[in-house]
Amino acid sequence: MSDMMKTIVFAVVMCVVCGLLLTAAATGLQDIQERNVENDRRKNILKTVDLISPEKQYSPQEIEQIYKDNIVQYGVTETGVIVDPAAIPKERVMPIYLYEKNGKIQDYILPIESQGLWGKIYGYMALEDDGSTVAGFTIYQHSETPGLGGEIEKRWFQDNFAGKKILDRDGQLVSIKIAKGEAEKLPEPKQPHYVDGISGATLTGQYLTEGLKKTLSEYEPVSVAFRKNRLRCRIQTEEPWCEEDAADTN
Image 1 (cartoon, rainbow, N blue to C red):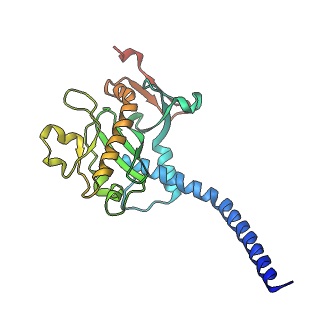
Image 2 (tube, rainbow, N blue to C red):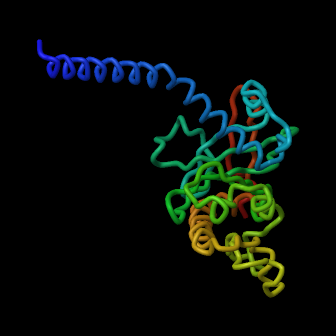
Image 3 (cartoon, helix red, strand yellow):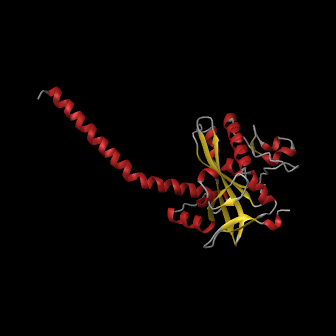
């Protein structure tokens, strides 16, 4: 066998071996990767309702237990009815997470998906049970430019959302918007609905503003139910349920 042929055979063998090793590694690590993704998702949901501290490190087991003790996932229909997602096809319901304490819903949490400058932005927004006040906000995945649009993942930006209102003085949905600069410099009536913008990241702010409005509009029917105090829920029981209270619909 010539030296050239030996080289070709060696290269082919090495490619096959490396390919098999990479495939085995990817398969072997898949479960770990999926667990890490799920842990990160739960962690961000818990952050929106202040159930974990940003300064403290938590083990996956701690995150799982805190989540299990406080959060339950449901589905919500287009008309705002909260249901068991297992009972209705997933394509017909949107996910919603309820934070319950002492038998009462404290906050409800919505998944946020928005277009960004370079890709999708994913996060969560928690609303208080009044259906209009933001309890918390997190971003857990994005492709924005570090130091510019990437600042949306920073605590200073996300903390600005707490206490903001999604309704104007007339009770109309206006969502939450990203200001071009400091929100406190806007006219007083607008300030409750704006958060401080990020210098040099105007487009990221515009995209996120549009994404928040889209999400809040889609979930508006269930927010209306919360505003009218028409939802009753039991979620830490063997037979959890959540439905409109027919006695309070008038």
